[in-house]
Image (tube, rainbow, N blue to C red; front, side, top):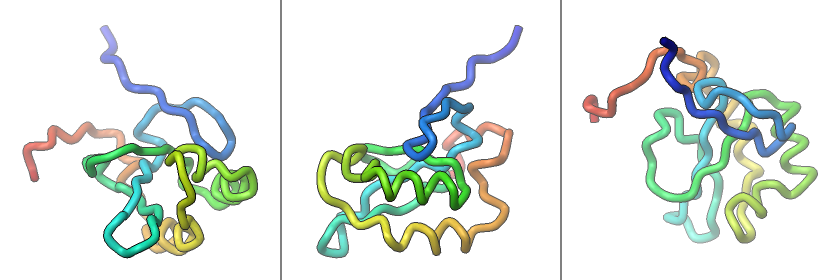
Length: 103
């Protein structure tokens, strides 16, 4: 019997995918205007949005204004391209499940 894995929708291409193949994004409300940050471990509190970790999906999401819709307000997602590129072996692409006990 196979275990259930959550399915999420990419806000860029709108494709449905196993959550381990997407990057969870959250708002960082600490630095004035809300900005979008990747939540590599998928543990940060708050509303999240999901995106494939590639530039094509990011560009489509930016063009469509998907970040503003997903987070229900104006957000700054311009620095996200650099943050996604700076993390080459993205942990979101790992297939093992984290228990959360390592926190």
